[in-house]
Length: 110
Image (cartoon, rainbow, N blue to C red; front, top):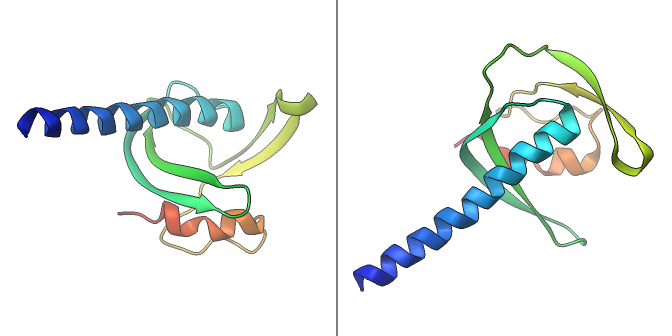
């Protein structure tokens, strides 16, 4: 039984390591923040009809970041994202897209 438990823990660890790598990549692509590391997971949120599962992570960076910034991505010919920090203990502002307002349950601090 102990080897099976170890194998199960290793599988879970690999699964979350994959999500953490993806979170670092997505953070860089969507916000321009590079050199980040995932500290720990916060939770997940299963998002509606598209059957997407979002994973929320605490990220650490080694340099100071602005309070507000814009970032142009290369996705689909380029998008410009307006980025800012938000306290996860507070509801998402009404100016946010409804999908981000609904995702707050998965991102709640634990």
